[in-house]
Length: 638
Image (cartoon, rainbow, N blue to C red; front, side):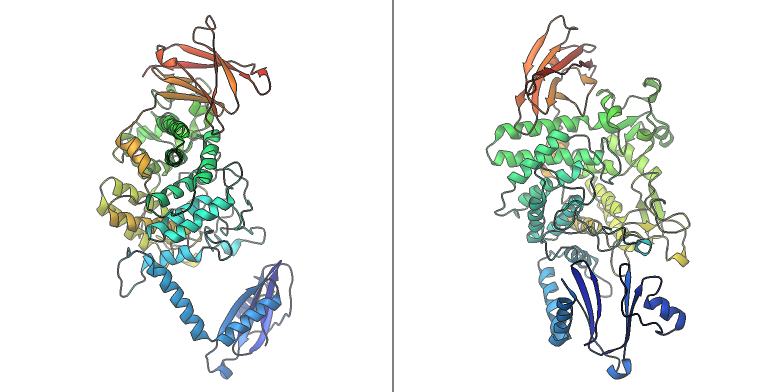
């Protein structure tokens, strides 16, 4: 039997047909492939038996006269051509109807486990079931629980062999979001498999790679704190819904929480994988993860660890405005608000902020201070503070930020509103519609329409949330796929770009389909399905404030509020040598072991008046030496 074969490394494919091929060829895509031949000559004229090392396209002509117009193609894979060919031939012998029925029955079984969340449509696709199928389709058959970001490659028509990753990788964040979609759909078993996979791929120090191949090998080399926090939230969600079953998630949670404690609150890169600093989105995920980790610690009867985790979560939560809410800028004045949450606050800038005022207004900054990037870049990420239960949707600072978001990032299209990730985003087609090539103009994301809909639901605007659900559906492809981005400029028919419809970005984006499913579930429940309950209860409902303010080497605060206890946090045992009267009286205090990789000392600065200054240094026991540098913190008015 004649077949078409292709091979790369240890993976081979074979394409067989129930009717013999009249002729066959293989060529280099875009140069000598069958489409080029047929497009120019209106028939196959070139017959290349073999080509090597490149983007290969296979072409075969089926004898329609002999077959009467009916034939079956089978595509099979194997470790070598022989195995792939055997599988392809076996599939032909088995019979199409048997394979089709088995395929349909397996999908029916999967969908039968899903809740009835979608609308019944007699003449349209059921977008809910399409979305659950998209999630399931992106799970690996070899590494159960692993879901890649997308089977597509953004602007794939312009990509070569150098982009071997594409979106065919596992991002821990996307995986947790996708597992959350499955959990919202009632598939606890599928979500548990994702947690198993994460438990198996966690690094020894507690974090996960920025993204990875299915077998857990890292691909990119970045580090993102939210991707270490998200798996804790998945374990907590499974526990909250009764789907954790017999899994002992505490060892994984402990390692992840310890990594967060040692390395937070600064994120090495934001969720869009671009810049380091203080991000509202990452802070929201970190704080929620620490609170949920504290519950796991409490379940194991480790009250001390639980207490420390909650105290740290409270400290970071109280610092969010100090680090990321900026006031009195050109943009805030133009929109008519007092301030807004920035996308990313650089670490050195945020540490200089007064906790009483948040970002120090520009006019009060020392000469030469550069704040333009921090003040001018706005993103949708502040909505995470509501989504994760840390701020009320009616908080004036959230409302102010929404006004700025809509002023800067919102675009109306033929299918409804859409929001951009942040201003000056360059990830998208060029103005003329040509594909992204390392530069371009960021477009609107349907995923962010879902995030806005969840905010509206939290704010009590369920009718607006339902309207935005319909917007997402209107922005889908004809097959019900949600794209990463839509084209939000004038139509470019020759480039296949229509206003309000999918761009050339990734499609389907699995995270977006998970968001759509969670929105359906949230609308049915009348509340946000994946909101971490503990963070909502502790910070939004009770508005608990921390008695502490922390200093650490990656967050060298220069101010603490009057009445706060200064908590010094370091990564190894030390003696804190300090004074509150310019060394006239000296105090020595040994650090305590949190058992999470951090040592801490609480200095009784709550008794000092505003304007006082605390000076301190360290003696490191492990290496038996002094730090050699003094650090200073000023007590600020409330």
